[in-house]
Length: 324
Image 1 (cartoon, one colour):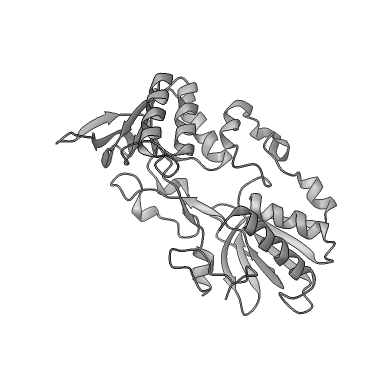
Image 2 (cartoon, rainbow, N blue to C red):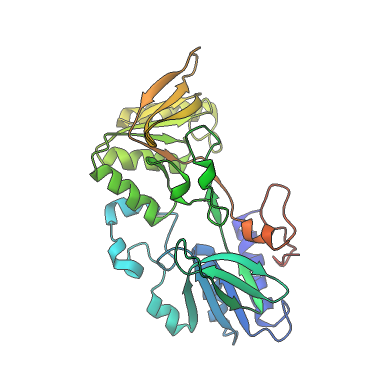
């Protein structure tokens, strides 16, 4: 439903949490996920002076930042500023002032009966830490959908706790979601990459294509639909946009069929595809592939602990945003 209605429901849920309607005598609130939505919840709870102890489990190595404006990072390149980047929403010190306990780590499991969450404090850490809660808020967001095309992923390295794990993809296949993703892209460009292929002709895919073009790489966009931004535009508008993008120097390929990612010793060297109107596939040489094909809900924790799920994924909630 619309963002305005969502915000109204979200605000009402915050007030109900403050009044204890989500759990009698609630003392501690644990938020899993410190993205924009998780941080918005924290701000509203803090403004309500709820009296609850708020903790937030942050999967990334820095507090919440503006993910919508992620492409801006290619100009800023200020990851070393940690929580004081131009994109940052909040600093660690400001969270302390709000009496919010910031925990860095990846949630691994939820024990609903014991009201505890296990999390790994470091990537690949074998030991896990446990944190308790009275109210648990899932603000886990989404992960990047990677098409099930041969060569796009390494199936035996699939990470059930982290769908976006770069170790689950061959060298040269990137997604476009976090500061670390963009830092990896910048590193590839500095290492001498000359050509990039972006899979997905939506808004974020076009932003990615322009970003690698600005990094002095030959940039290609592959879109399976017959025109760009098919979710937002009709065909006439999509064709006009395609001409504009081509005029900028970015090569647009619409109506394509992607057959496989070509690898050499585990590294990307090209993409095999069938161009629109062609009968046989060709190979488009490339040094890297950026996947921007939409997102899917990060619902693995909810599934694991037995919450009721939506028909297309995600957690099923009531009018107060409460789970089963």
